[in-house]
Length: 112
Image 1 (cartoon, one colour):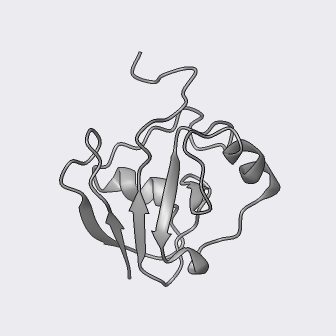
Image 2 (image 1 turned 180 degrees about the horizontal axis):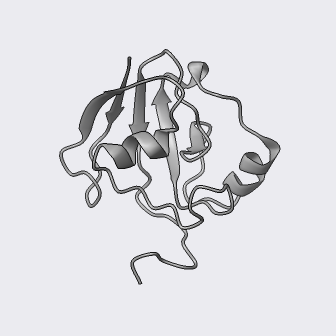
């Protein structure tokens, strides 16, 4: 099992969260299954940037970025070297520390 630590986020998970998942799941699916409501306006099809996260620790064990993911990340708010689209990142064997950005860019909100 791989431990994922979500750092506190003012709106989405004020207390932060810690849980374990089986390797092979995406960060987005793991978060959603554990009560962290990450936006995913494109239904996890790698067509937007609303599920953007920063993988602060454990990034070396994750699936590689695709060219499409990199192209979309260029449009994400608060992009940094640890940025990934959580719907595309497959969890490996190494524990992760994930930070949710303060903002997302969402042209079509699911919660309209």
